[in-house]
Amino acid sequence: MHSISIDRVPVSNLANIDLNNTPFGRVFTDHMFTADYIDGKWTNLNIGPVVDFRIHPGNLTLHYAQSIFEGMKVCIDDGGTPLLLRHDMHIKRLNRSAERMCMPEVPESMFEDALRTLVNLEKDWIPSKPGSALYIRPYMFATDEFIGVAASQTYKFVILTLPVGPYYDKPVNLKAETEFVRAAPGGVGDAKTAGNYAASIYPAKKAREQGYDQVLWLDGKEFKYIQEVGTMNIFFVIGDTVVTPAFNGAILHGITRDSIIQILRDEGHTVEERNISIDEVVEAHQKGELKEVFGTGTAAVVSLVKNIGYKGTDYSIDVDSFKIAPFAKDYIAKVRRGQIEDTRGWIVRVEDAVTV
Ligand SMILES: *Cc1c(COP(=O)(O)O)cnc(C)c1O
Image (spheres, rainbow, N blue to C red):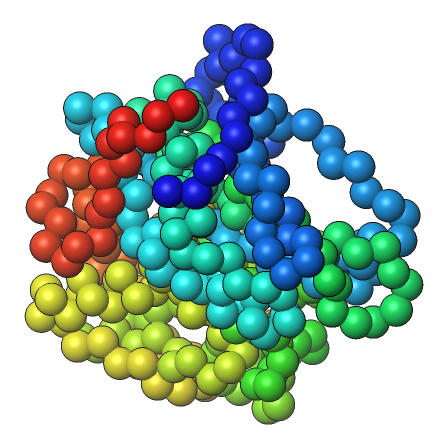
């Protein structure tokens, strides 16, 4: 057990919050975890009030975006015990992102202790309403004061927690992007690093001006092969086959994507991870074989896609006839609340073992 100092807020803000009606990403719990990487080791492990950081104007992150993050959720079961879903995968992915961005590894045991202690402390903040959860945002950023492109010597690792409702409740309208690129193989598209999202804001704004909700990214070379959506991986049901783009170095290794592949295969569905071109999707649509399209990610879990716009033509899909996507969404919702048996070892109960 790593030693974490704890400074509690004098009065919780929870009484002022309507937990089951919080806008996504705007409401923070009372406490956060922080640790500093100095002289090659993690130190100052603390859980304290969510307060401002002091940042030097020359902070490296502000200039060169040496910064990574994760996103996961914790729910409570019917008995009120917090349940983490596949958090080990998130810890490993943060460390893969760290490696790509030349940042230090967060020891798994330190991450685990921080996570459990914080979740325990903020347990009362976990919304009980189906579809709602406590969102967990671990992140790390460079803290050196240095104008120059180089790996920082010092870093801060933080875990924030936020009560959230359902993310995209409504079916989404996607624009297959033929001008801008999110990521290319060899780049940082498969790291959860800040710059990827900064680069996506302008294309997303353009798409919204044209009436779309989000961008469906195509490959950066030919604008042909489908990659993913802003913060979601993407699935197509063509005939009886479920297809999702194979990893190619430019696609984020989604954990929800992995869960859904396993769940659907266990249900007897054929799931293919392979290259899929936008032309194949259009052709399937024209033949009436495009049965479902959906995005997957921790925030949205499963988001139904009602339309894809490509080169000025809209290809709409009847979301009311979807079967696989709603099944997968419901399945994950139940697993993470302990309402169906966890046969895959995905769930970890956060018991009151941590002493404060
Ligand atoms: C986080 C993220 C996803 C989804 O990953 P999950 O592990 O399922 O939450 C997909 N694409 C991008 C670009 C992301 O940042």
